[in-house]
View 1 (spheres, helix red, strand yellow):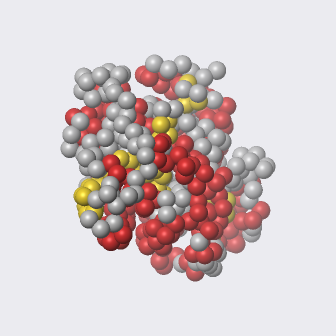
View 2 (cartoon, rainbow, N blue to C red):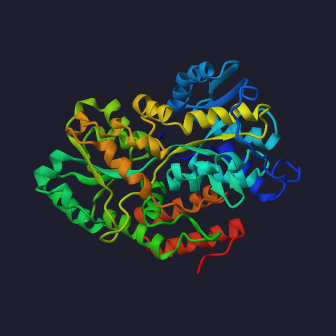
View 3 (cartoon, rainbow, N blue to C red):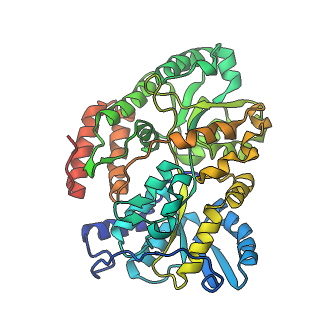
Amino acid sequence: MKKITFTTPLAAALLATVAAVGGCATGGVPAAKAPKLAQSSGSAGTVSGKIQIWSWDVAAKALQRLAPAFEQAHPGTKVEVVDIGYDNAYDKITVGLKSGSGLPDIITLEDTAIAGYAENFPNGLVDLTGVASTYKADFDPAKWAAASSAKGLYALPWDSAPVGLFYRRDYFKQAGVAPEAIATWDDLVKAGEKIKQATGKRLFVSDLTSAAGFTTLLQQLGQGYFKDGKVAVNSPAAIRALTLLKTLKDQDLLQNEKGWDGRVTATKQGKAATQPTAAWWTGTLTGEMPELSGKFGVIPLPAFDQGGSRTSANGGSALAITAQTKNQDTAWAFVQWLLAEKEQQVSMMKTEALFPAYLPALSDPYFDEAQPYFGGQKVNRLFADQVRAIPPIELTGDDKQAEELVKKAVSSALLNGKDPKAVLDEAATQIAAATDRQVAS
């Protein structure tokens, strides 16, 4: 599932209010411990009755398509899938958690939302540690970390989002650049200069008012906004990530386009030679730009240092069971059946292009099929081989608040030419004041 900033204005305001009152996470009611599922569900006597799931977009379509198969395998069950639409999804979830009512049995959450809800509503989601911990080795480590906190596991990973470098074969060929020779970001910057000189095209499209590109590079370096609970947006890794983006901007290699639609349109028009983004971009290309078939290839993300990490993450989602469920056993049975069984995960990859976070699914022959759109390249295998290497990072309930201040720092550096270290130092100070955390030394 593609990554989109999840906090709409109402949800942001509610979460900010909740964060400000600390332990009173449900409108003045003292926080309680998260309810736990401690025993494995699955017996005929416990798996029965109706459950409801909230989701949106292709995820909702996948749930709607597969729900009848679960009902058939578990007679006496009924799964209702409600597509609540992305635009208002987190408003509705936040209101339901804050009021303590109105939520379904299961909700879809993007990775970046899990920690915030688990921390700000500590009695709102079911802790799955007792029933799901045996699956830990079977899931993308970065995804498992995103669904976890020091207190428990609050969702089961669904789709992963390994990042690679999509490139235009024709532009590389015209410039005499061999894609297999791109091993580091320094290599790509040099290649970008050659490509721009030969074709007039910039290296890649980016929204310079967004923190997404910076965050992806930061995770490639193994870090999030916080480290050991302290603010780390001005760490050496963070400065290095923003400095790379500023170098690209200063050399006129970034095509600035606003938002998702801007990126898609610019790619469709051939304005850039590469796009460092996640596996879900294959679905965007094949679905929205069929006329460009054969023009794209994919290589691993360039490393910052020779031999360093060559991937990151950008997006992904999970399923969480709400504490408001009246049918924990059936809710868990469905989550387990959908996400921790190879057949369903491969089915969703084939039909909805939801790249599995469940590692056993990646051994399916489907991932070794050549893809005509990409000139016969086995793109899914390339991404599958990267999943285990995605650097896990620390996520917190303050990430969204931090992101707003990071956006300002990124914009100041890329649009106003400010020094990366200076703007990140300022952002770190502001984040520390806003979240009552220390700045990492």
